[in-house]
Length: 83
Image 1 (cartoon, rainbow, N blue to C red):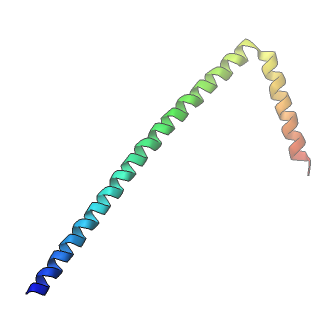
Image 2: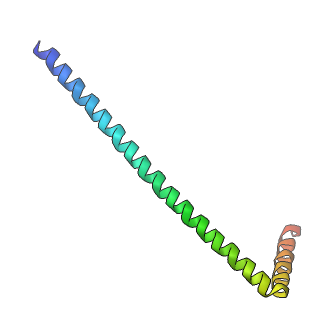
Image 3: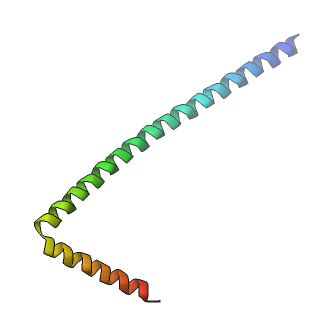
């Protein structure tokens, strides 16, 4: 009987430890998901700010925007055609 009780107690301890481990992992994943969501929101806000800045610059200085776009296209074209 004593051996059966020890096995039962040990099994219960192992089961409780496993449940605690699963709970800890689940909490860590929830925390990681929340932080990732926050970073995505911050990145989205930053991207929107950049779009607004580009739009403002293009409206204020359209000739400069065309020249910069042409220069970028020229450089990219040089890299693509160069093998």
